[in-house]
Amino acid sequence: MLSDFININRNDNTPIYTQIYREIKKAIENGNIKGEEKLPSVRKICADLDVSKTTVETAYSALCSEGYIINVPQKGYYVEKGIIIESKINSRKAENKKPDKVYKYDFSGKGIDKNISNIKEWRKYVKDILNKEYLLNTYSENQGETELRKALSKYAFSSRGVKTEYNNIVVGSGSQTLIYILCGLLGLNKTVAMEQNSFPHAEQVFSDFEYKIKYTESDSKGITIESLEKCCPDIILINPNNCGNGASGMPITRKLEIIKYAQNHNAIILEDDYNGELRYKSHPSACLQSYGTDCTIYVGSFSRILLPSVRISFMCLNESLFSKYIDTKDNYNQTTSKIEQLALAEYIKDGKLEKHLRKLRRYYKAKSDLMKSSIKKYFESYEFNETAMYFELKGEYELLKNSDVKAMRASGDNVIRLNFSQINSELIDDGIKQIYKLIK
Image (cartoon, rainbow, N blue to C red):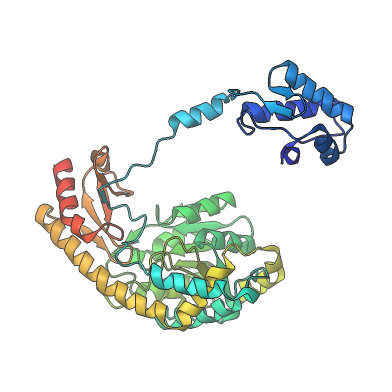
């Protein structure tokens, strides 16, 4: 309704009829009211805005005199055709906006392989929840649905060794959302130690809270204790599956060293366990949190395991931070769909997630072997990260520009990172060949 978008400031010295005139004029120029569209009657505007008939008639008369609208006898007021005056800003946006390019060889890792997605079965679980109308007539629990948190507690322990009670789990739509909550609990004036380019979404949150970010040094085992001592952090952000030698992850000795450092310096470890359970060449090792529950906050998600579009992540708080969260949790609205939360709870309880995970491991093992075989045909050396599902090659990323190949942008100047999660297996060998031709 037009009247819903007419803003009147009764404390403004500008006459009300002028305010109405300006609002309608702006809507016509922006194209929000289309040509030949009928405007609400004078009586309707009067009732909706609680203004006099004379005020509205004066505004309409001014618009008629300038040619924005016309008065058709016994029918009403209509907008003239062809009046769209785009602002310079909107015009620039329209000119600069280009349609997303579709790449034949997509190694960007922005999605998952359609041959391994479990959409059909997932749809069944969502449909089952939709049929239970009594579950949908209330808001979701602020902390996350109890049934999901109970299922997550058992699943996280069996798959990653996470030691937590379901009451200590907080559910949110993505890791970034949960880190915002965590930073609110930790307070201001904190220093974060993290590997450079390891987690840009978390880094954005830390910047929003004006935390000091210090980058650590790493060796083949991950973040070094010497670099932590230089940073003197309050928060240590790590992904033990994607550090140092990415193919094998952080060894238990380094995990224990980091935990000991955190305990001795009253620091919090934020463990981003991205794809921790998705190991297919090596045996999944227990997460860092299982060795240091008192000082570690664990964050997990399902974007690679289930579907990227299902934005469900969870955070396991230690006892001290959970006691703070309890006092403030009613101030945080739940950002994840209640329907998807309940569907995931049933999906986990029925053993479907673990079954799908076993299938994923077999599938991605075969796919990584195929990728490795193709790379070795054309390149002498490469680096492999198992859980992140990418290979790194030496070569200029910019050389792929304007080609049919899309890759991940890596931190190095002479590095091309190729993720194989999304690309069809049949296109891998030809895609690697195209990359070789472009950079050689």
